Length: 300
Image (cartoon, rainbow, N blue to C red; front, side, top):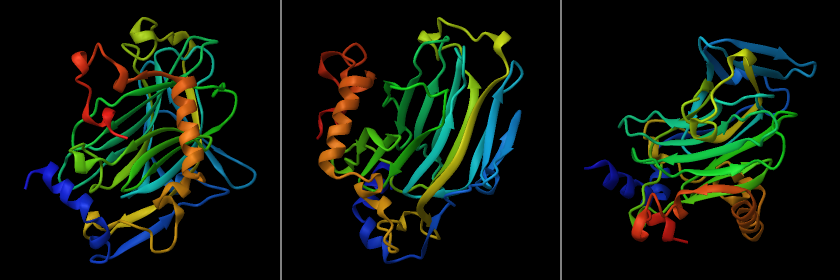
């Protein structure tokens, strides 16, 4: 069976399959989080800062030679992921600080949920670039201007991913929702576990003003800080697509995981669209001429 058809079938049958295979539900530690208990440092120049209350901060650095990155120890199929980040201060043009979920499924089809923070020249606001890949297809970019200075303090960035939707939040404010419309032929990540990665890297060819502003290496090393990684979700055992609802009662499986009722969520999403969105692929008539927008753009 082709992958898209298989995924449609699995999406339709999640609740039934949940009863047919063993799954475990895991929660990464909350307060006093030691990041190295939850993530593995993969490469590059890093710092580990131990707090007096038992928590730990990871600093990822970028210099002219290389960037750096970490990866969560556990992968999930549907989860609520939260992490606190303090972005590169000063002239960060050309740099990109990224946290993303990426698939590790047995079918090797690419699913991914991206949060990329595009650096800037000193005094300009950061751009949060979001994208979603499903069934190997991406191109679903939406960009936002952050309404605060993310270099002065830590802020919480969250991904809520369940069988109904992907919700992206900043400090518990919903800014983007991507609904599951498999029944209408729109790909959605439903059958592959994904794992969180964090990376600081150089993308001066496109990151700042479309690549017009290059990285000023005299400012290196650049450093972004990460702490308080929290994850609540399903760790599939055996049959990956067996995760549907959380039998332990965890609230991430619906909108309640964001602490929002539907009315409040709609208000926040509308405000983010009106006040903070600077690019939305669903309104890009140059990229999609003659009304040829992707199918999801016309769905509720």
